[in-house]
Image (cartoon, rainbow, N blue to C red; front, side):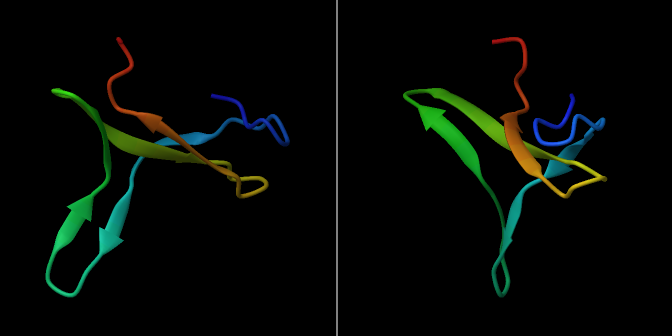
Length: 58
């Protein structure tokens, strides 16, 4: 995946998490019974972050 800002190759498959005191929570997208975990990619050149789901086949 190319960065939309600088067109460098982005590093993929980072997990998105929210740190709580004692809980580790992952963010997901849900519609009805369909649910997708959110992943992130980071541009090593300009620092831009983009999100995508881990279910690329749908």
